[in-house]
Image (cartoon, rainbow, N blue to C red; front, side, top):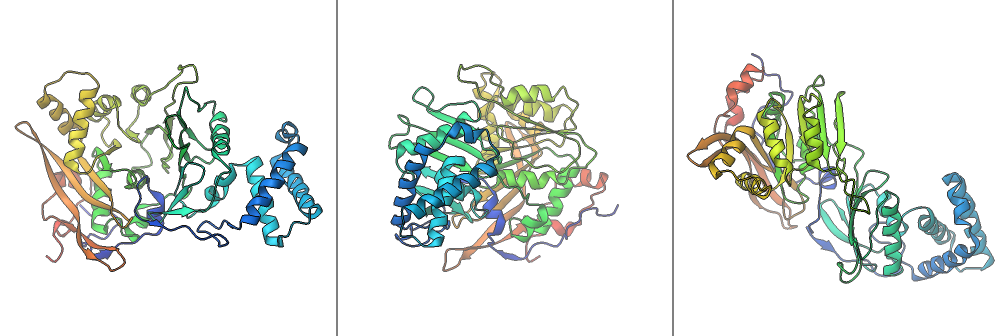
Length: 472
């Protein structure tokens, strides 16, 4: 049969770390490096003018404006019209007070006040910056952003901790939740789909903590990730065959390693005629197929009722005639239902898991099963995992902030009480540039795929050269 993959099957040559949009896309809560904040009077990394005169003027005008505005009336009007009217009022106030600011600084004051009234205050310009992937607030006086896999301090500030609490309350109240002493932590989704998490005092000791994972409207495809050096063309050809031939895939990795981005890319290999159901805590997957049903879990309301868990969604999904089920992240009791689905006719299902290696991913699955309270012999648990999972794709975040697919490992069965694994591809580190950039290459391990015959039966006859190590 002919090779149906659209990627070159030549082993990848030495590749250097690229950052581009791949570093902007993936999840990240860990610091790669921190750049110092700019001095007062300079423009900072996110375009905020940190002139103290501008800040003082904004605060003074905003307080006066609050005494003049009828916020209830503004809420009933078209937002564009309301913003234009308020902007004109602020400009007139600046003129009347003869504020010693140039035109650019005056417009900045206007913009910041509009953000305060209609948006999310100091966070608004950060949310509008497409190069920022994460916003991390450590109390009112310290804000960090992630750009290209690295953290840098943004010179935006809240007036005080009460101001930060007001912004948090504005976000969570819009989705019917609250954050206070009785409920000190909360998850929410912003209007643009960004993921929001906050923790308030007394649990947050020094002041409220906020984390925002920005939603990316542009989905990175496999071609993009190959071009950016996330993995090689040979690995892409292999993954295309694996997904199209309905292997069950787990994408494993640490926080911010690019698991969701990888899962999105792999889903592009699913045939358009298949019915796919996705289950997530926060809807982030962007599948392009025609027949997709999306589900999102829901936390309890303020009375502690109305929760819908991922397990609830998964159980219902099994009754909805899915060809494939994709779970955004498996981390609790839904693991039982996920493994059973993979074992009972829903081949080609996929999920992500937090783990540092393929072996750790298997151990993590065992631990999650144990935490459900179901008593099973360890051999039976491992046999369930070995028969359900076919492939573990390991995504990693390296110390220079880049993301790489560092391993593709097949689950080949059981040997005694041990799950047997076979690594097909890996990322090999070769050195370090003077600027800290990692030099490495993707290479095969020289072993034929355990599923090679299955690939051939499905029309994906990969040539032997795809499994040859670099230099062979």
